[in-house]
Image 1: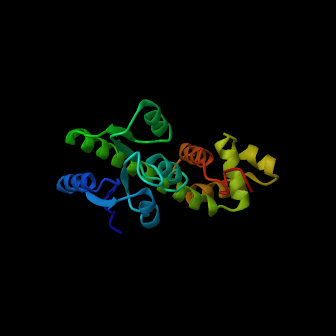
Image 2 (image 1 turned 180 degrees about the vertical axis):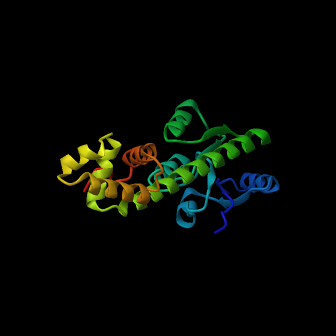
Image 3 (image 1 turned 90 degrees about the vertical axis):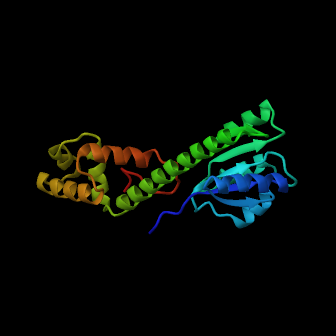
Length: 215
């Protein structure tokens, strides 16, 4: 399946500015979509396509900060670059604490804007790659049997096969068989790979997903 080219979403109620920015971005080779309000964006856009958001701070209806707060609850989330003529220090601090990729003032230099967009797109690509990796790890973990999950727990804790066999009340040969299946299902070539996968799963923020060590 071909990878979709990223889309720069421009959300600004100033139509003349929006048209000018979109023209500049298209000339620079970006795919662009434009929205006249935060509400229009929320009703029509999907974060499934990679990219970023170029967002005005103050607009009629929901503000840029309101949109940022709403989008923070979505998965995947898109990096946001605020671009505004009404910025001040408290608002910029609030935006950055909310996870904004950048905060730029109008008028903005072409080079500064394109650099911020490239940085945001790189961030989005990294986030999507990490999310894809996590989903793959969860799928592998889901394929483990309850006993294989127990064996995984003890392997990543550094237990030897004979120690695991003693704890589980089984033979070392059986533990070796379980361990081999764990390595295969988790697509791990070494114990270090298993440890990294376990840490990645345990460190994920998703709720309700099975975690290593749970039966």
